[in-house]
Image (cartoon, rainbow, N blue to C red; front, side, top):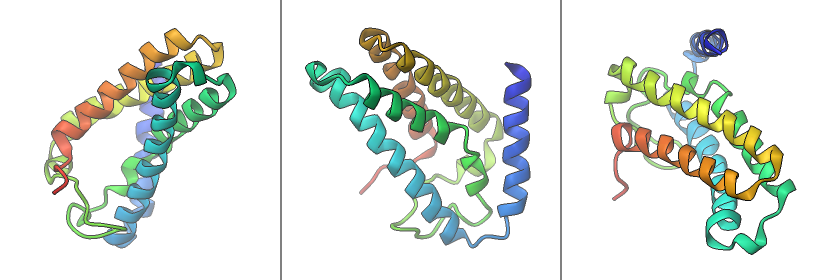
Length: 155
């Protein structure tokens, strides 16, 4: 497990150095698109696990969980290029400057999110809605942990 995390972080660094030449506004736009698509899939899971459990659909849950895990493992960290703490993608970025200076804090929230998102995909594959609901809560907590530390409130 530890070697997978090191490999993922190394891939992010390599991708980040290759992407570092991108314009900050492009990096912001790509981040916003990725997180928006992931949020849509989180919403689908919330709908069938929390809001309307009678609507649970195993195949749809697996697809949503796999997308969330894929996003977690996609190297989105490479999209936090210098200068992308300010500016506009599709809208004004909400990232706090601290995300660029608190490498230890960012590492903790990123590793936690990756771990829980990968577990979400595994649990979804079982079709156990109760276990998936519990794991969905864990993923949500990792999202909240990052948002609380590194994302500005929307005005």
